[in-house]
Image (cartoon, rainbow, N blue to C red; front, top):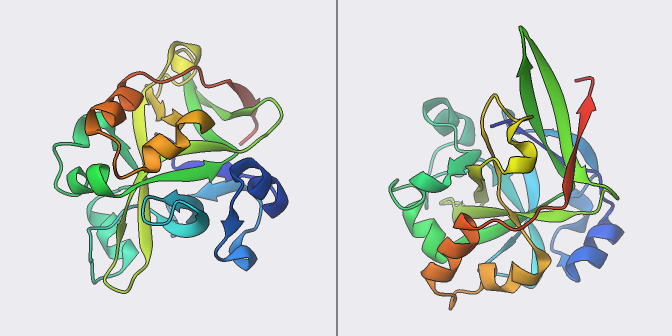
Length: 209
């Protein structure tokens, strides 16, 4: 999966979309490309605080982890997690039950292999409106939030383009926001959202880089 997201929305547009306020409003800056291979923070909404937008470091670390982000990422990249690993890997299993989150983005990048070249695409809404990606998060020993994006098999609309990875982030529609973030939601309902993705309403635009 591509290690790049996009969020070009202003604070005002995000507040309008989520109907929530920012915990750290001064930290948000619209960015066309968020490169996860470098330590980056993203806007998230968490189960612990579903009524406020906060910041999380992209690339989940173990719960109560005491060392630095880059050291762990050298051992295991955790920007994304496949749905098949959610209930198997010790790093993700507990988080799926008790620490789900939504990442607020306006796009993500995918790539297509054509002959001996790579074509790059930015996937976003036609009006560049923000949307939610499904995620999980943990809290480090010094109270920083770290998160991963949940990946699913690429849907039919993107499978022909995204032939290099054949997976893509799971979008959570606004109508299921509260269900995803509610600690009382049955895990079977969470599994249903993961295994039955809704029509994304996204389009892929070829870009130069």
